[in-house]
Amino acid sequence: MEVIYSLIPGMIFFGLVFVGVLIWAIRKGQYEDMEGDGNRILMDDDEPAGNNATSNKRVKRPGLNFPDED
Image (cartoon, rainbow, N blue to C red; front, side, top):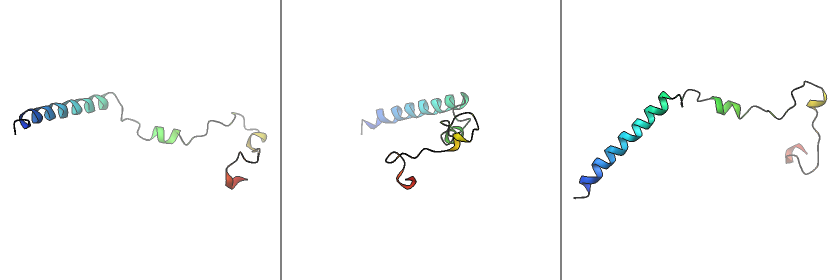
């Protein structure tokens, strides 16, 4: 029973620290762009910058493509 007298203030202290960190993160803009990274990962940056007809052709190499593309 005596240990609870030190655990309750300790957990209140940690709770206040976590709330402070959350408020700090919100003020610094950590949660401003929630969809940006999710959309950027879907963009394909591996293609060349030009719009040539040859840039759209894919070279098929046996064993190196996905199984459904062979």
